[in-house]
Amino acid sequence: MDLGLRNARAVVVGGGRGMGLATARCLADDGARVAVMARSAADLDRACDDLRGRGSPEAIGIVADACDEQRVREAFAELGRRWGGELNILINAAGPDVQGTFEDLTDEQWRRAIDQGAMGMVHTVQTALPLLRKAEWARIVNFSAQSTQRQSTVLVAYTAAKAMVNSISKNLALLLAPEEILVNVVSPGSVASEALVGWARSVGVDDSDGVDPYRLMEAIAEHFGHPAQLPRAGLPDEVGAVAAFLASRRNAYMTGANVNVDGGSDFT
Image (cartoon, rainbow, N blue to C red):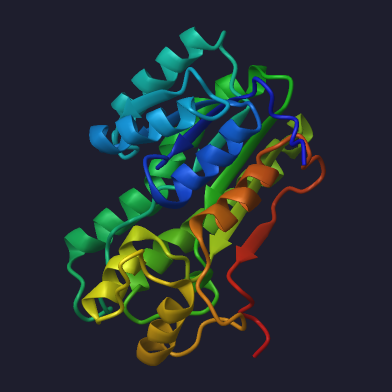
């Protein structure tokens, strides 16, 4: 499907790896001009090499922590100069790395979860809005998590931060609707991210060619209960494809939505 992204200007925050990189690949495959932002220069180098081999030969890597307001302002100012002051797509795919139960988490862990999981998104949207408003068309896609709908006791801070993303995104959709800037949320379920694959290997699920998504789902079901109707975990590319559609001109009438990409979770 042609998503209408040829020469669209797109920023993927958290695009150095995982579902963020998968989304950036989908955008590049359709001809978008992609910039990826992440904290790791090494991840960005690998990501940009990949994207340049696709449909984004001038892919840009930006070393920045979205929690650092000043650095975010500097990054978007530079992109504005490169791209004529316009931006079509902002994807916020970064998330917190905080796990633990309510009784175990420290105040510092709670603050880090909220900063990484929600305030980074606030900073990027606030900074990018002037560029988005100048473009002929614009989309914002924020990554949440299916755990906001089906709780896990070891992800209480992570889930609270993602619930903030849901609420803020809904409000942004209302605010920006008169300007036809569409704002949507993607909520992945059990997806074979690096973190989840690392956990699977720690409990003995390992294959020479990587963790099989069916075996990964078996391990999740054994330790946490079965989280989906499909018998396997999702893949980052499957989430990226949905995010890319929401960010595209093909999506012309969906805003304020929260789209589950979770293998079916709400049948029980």
